[in-house]
Length: 248
Image (tube, rainbow, N blue to C red):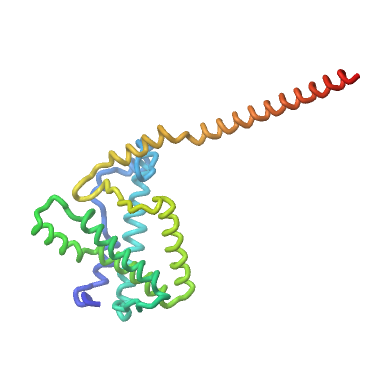
């Protein structure tokens, strides 16, 4: 572990557990119980109280008091195997792809999301180098190495990872028809524009029939078909009766 001398895992754990949000202090206790209706949002919260309570629990209980401390402890425990490499062999092909895709994604995340793309080249490069050493990158690295270390040494989870990657690949190809599609970012250091997300929701509401309407249409069609069937059956009986009388 190259940065082991600088890495003080206990301090990191302590810092994470005692982390607080200045934004949360803006709201009183009544805010977390508020029934004030919220407009459509990407988090799916229906009321202000629901949104605040969920945000606080996920970020400042689940993430910072449990997951993040556990990851720092894992890094300390994994010290001996931190620099283990994936052997370039045929049975490790999917693991190597996972590692490459993970590294590509963290670099894209840095370049397009965490950094200010409007800065001058020299200043931006300094910012990029500084951000690469941030805790968020170290935590992602711990996650990646944990998954790969387990998959390399446990055939059951190796096969699960193989199946997961194949499933993701097949569903992505099906969704995007095999085309190269780039993700559209709405929130970063350079831009904060949720308009396209809201626009997508509005377009979906305008073009996609609501579930209730679909069910209503289906029921209408079913009832219409049933009535038509009864009518045809009745007409068939009358026709048969007509033929019988004619033969007499």
